[in-house]
Image 1: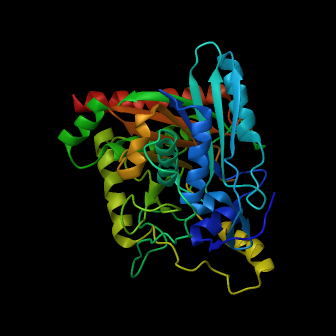
Image 2: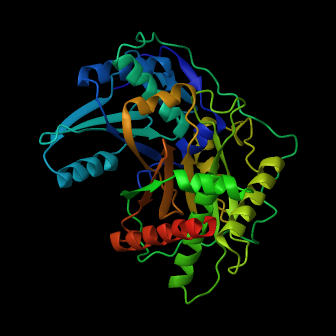
Image 3: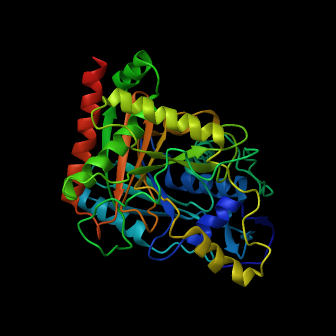
Length: 418
C-alpha cells in the first residue's frame, strides 16, 4: 500500500527505459536463486532486507511518473514457505516468478525463502526489477542483507537517493561497424505464441582449465569464450531448423558503464552487440579472437553510451511513456538474436555474497523479441550458466538440445587448448 511521500529520486535513463518497457506479458525483472550454506535465521534475513531497503532507498520505493517515491515504512518484502520435494520446490519458484510485480504499487525487490523439510536445505529466491538494479547491484543488495543478518554490520538508517555516475563518450556510435544491414534474425522457435512464463535450466561448468586455456592461448578472455559459445549455439540452432540457411546472428552483451568500475548501486549496465561475422571454417579460438576484436571496437567507439537525459522527457508526463515505448520499439532497432551475460569479478561488497552462497542461478528477463537468455556467474573455479526460456516458444526438449550444443562448444574449446 502506498504511504505519504518522505523522499523521492528521479529515474535514470536506464531506469526509465526498463519501467516503460515493462509489461504484464513480458515482465522485466530478473531473479537470483541462491543455494545457501549456513543460512541465517529467517528473522535475521528479514532484518537484513529492511536495512538494505534503507541503505539502497530505491528498493523501498514505488514508481510515480518519472520518480522513485519512498514508502514511509517499507516492509521487509520477505515471504517464507517449506517444501518436501524437488518438484514442489520448482513449482513454488515458478509461481513466485509468475506473480505480477507492479512498480507503481510494489517495491521492486521481492524475496522468498524456501526450506526443504526433509533435507533442511535453504534456497533464497530474490526478484529484482531491472528498473532498480543490474546484476552487480543485486549482489551488493544481497551482500548487505547477509552482513546485517549475521551481525557484521548495524542496520542502516534511511539514506538519501543518489544518482549513479556513468561513463560518457564524446562521439558515440549508434551501432557496431560489424553490424548487419538491418536487424539480426530472431532465434528459431517451435511455437509462435509467447507466454508470460519463464522457465530455466542451469548447468555447472568447471572453469579452471578453460580460464587457464584462455590465458595461455592469448588474444581473448574467458568471458569472450563463453560469449562466443552462445553466439555459435544461436547460429547453429537457426541453421539446424532453417534448412541450413545462414542467418544474421547477433548477441546482446551487457557491459558495466559505471564511472568507477563495479562501484555504485543502481543501473550501471548498458550493452553492445556482437555478430557472427567469422567463417564457419574458423577454429573456435579464431572465432573468440574475432569476438574480442568486436568488443574492443565497440568499447572504444562508445556503442554502450547512454544519453544523460532520456529522450522526450520535455513532453507532458502522460505522453512520455507511450512515446518512449514506441521509440524503444522502433522496428529497425537491432535487439540481436539473444542475450548473454556473465559475472566473474566479485569485488568489494558484492564479493562477500559467496560467504553464504554455494551456488547461484540467474533467471533472466526476456524482452518481447527474445525466447532465450543465457546468464552466467563464476566463483572459485565454478561457472553456473542459466538458460532462461519462454515455454510458450521453446520446449524443455529444445532447451536440452541447446544446452548440449553449448556443452559441445566447451568440449571443442578444451580440445583446441590441449
